[in-house]
Image 1 (cartoon, rainbow, N blue to C red):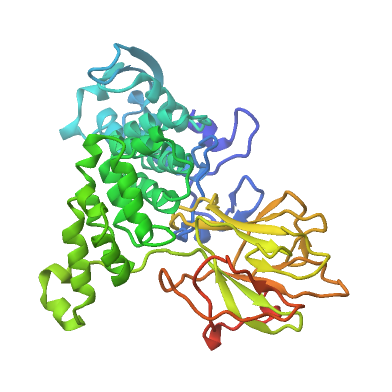
Image 2 (spheres, rainbow, N blue to C red):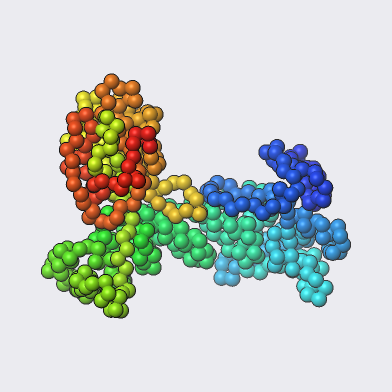
Length: 507
C-alpha cells in the first residue's frame, strides 16, 4: 500500500513523490512544481478560511506522515513482519449505549498521524507494548462511529460531517493527538456557528474543551447580541457565563451603554435562577458612560426599587464622574472601573457635493438602525432630485459571513437597492432588490455616473466613533447636494481630521 502511494498507482491520480536528495521537482496536483529547497522551507503563516463543507486530509500531510513511516520500515528500524494488517476493536465511551465494532487497519497508517498509536503499535525495545505484536487491538472508551471517521480521514477520504459528528471526532483526534484533524474539526465547527443556537454552541465548545471555539462563540455573541432575532428559548439557552463573556468586552457592539443594562435585565427576567445572576452582570455595565444626568434620573426612578443592586452602582458611577483623575487612581473602588468605549458604530458616511467638495458633516452608522437614502424628507440622507426614488436604498448591518480564524467576528454594513433607476456602487449598478456588502472607501451614487444633473455621492468609511452620544453641528446642504435628514443616526457629525479628508477620487 505504501509503495502504491509513492508511485501514484491505483486510481490513476496525480502521484505524490517522497523525500529525495536529488533536484527532481515535486509534483503538485495543480500542475506546478517547486524545487526541493523551496519545499523544505517553512510555510509562511497564512490566514485560513474554514468551510462547513467536506473535510479532506491535506496531500502534504498525508505524504509526509506516510513516507516517514515507510522510510523507517525500509531502513529496518521496524521489523517488516510487524507492518501488517491488524484488527482494531473500538468500544464506546463508558456510560454510553453499548456498542463495539471491528475495523481492518494497517499499522503504518494508524501510526502515521498519531504519536500515541505509534508508540502503542511500534514502540522501542525497552518500552514495547503488548499491542505491538498483537493481531487484535482493543481501544476502550473509543466511539466506533468516530473511529471510522478517523480511519476515513487517515486514508484521505472526504468527511461529510454534522456539528455533532465534528465534536465527537475532535474529542477522538484530541485524545490520540491527530493534530491536523483536530484543527480541521475546529475550523468546521467555527464555520457552522449560528447565532440563533449560540447557547448550544457554547455548551458544545465547553464539552470538547476547545478554547478557540469558545472564543469564536463569544465573538459572535458580542457582534450579534443586540440585533439577532432572539426567541425566549434561544436567548434563555445562554448561560450567565456566556453573557459575562459578552458584556465585559469592549468589542460588544451596541447603540449606547444603557443597552447593556437593558439586555441584562431582559435575560434575567427569563427565570428566577437567572435573576439571581443579575447583580454580577450589572457590574459589567460601564455606568459612568451614561453621564451624570442619566445616572441621576435612574437613581430617582422606581427602577432602583425593583433592582436592589442598582443604587450602589449608580452612586459609585456618580462619584467616579465627580472625582478627578488622581483621586480615582488612589481609590481602589474607582480605579477598578472600566470606562473604555465599546464598538458603538460600524462606520460612517461621508457626504460629497455635486461639485466634488466634501460636506462638513458625516453620518455615523449604528448597528441596530437602518440608514435610509432617498428623496423623502423622512430619509436619513436626502437627495432633492426628481430622478431619485423616495426610498432609494438602505444601509444596514449583518454579521460578517467571511470566516477567518485570524480575525475577530465583526458587523459588516450591507447596501440594499430599493429603486427602479438603480443605485450605483463604485459606478456599477446594484439592481433593485439586490444587496451588496460595503467596504472602506466605497462610493455610493443614486444616479448614473454620466447623469446630466449630478447630485453628489456618498463615501463609506470604516471608522470607530469616539463613543456614545457624540454630537456635532448640522449644515444646510445646497439643493444639488445630499443632506442629512432630521432622523439620521446619531453621532459623528463634524469636521474629520485633515488627514482623513476624502475627495471623490478616494472612493
